[in-house]
Length: 231
Image (cartoon, rainbow, N blue to C red; front, side):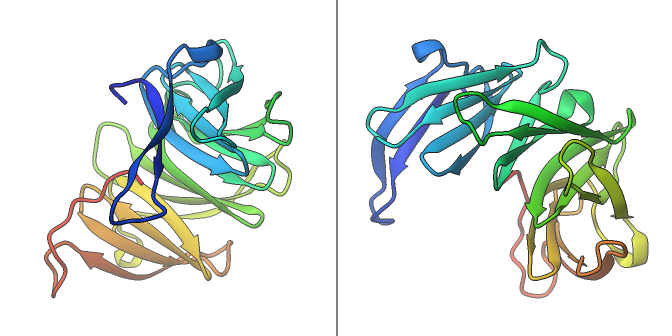
């Protein structure tokens, strides 16, 4: 973040990772002011930063990364983006300054286009996003206080995302207070929360009815003390 750059590291030998290449803010018109997150699909890296933009970088040659395109929306959308995930031809970007998710068509990396947006409300702020199939899983925090939750949104039509259901901190014992990241696999959502230092497991096999399934809290049983962060 402080170097305002995208760094590429060769991890073919995990025991000895080494610098392969990089591209810095301003190179070929790229914008990397305080970069917050990156996702990779095919030969392209998609970077969001406090430039309020989506930056597309061609990394087909890791030694010589090339600026491909920039999507900037005049500070209307893509406002203070903090996270990004990619599914198919779409990038889903957490825009913390807009309390929502912006959905971008990246089928043409040279010309990404905003397709739709999903907003929560002014009293909450999204913190992470994951997409599986036709559903977007969005964690959020409550501004100015502890708490938060998970929302499940139907994105089968990216132009018109529709809320299906959700589960909040405390529901049936769920611990989703100040959530930092979410990952979905085999019908379950795994949510890390900073405030409770916990891993929450939610059964999302029925998108209309998410159910608290279990949790692991820092220091409980044989769990090591940990403080979850963005991933």
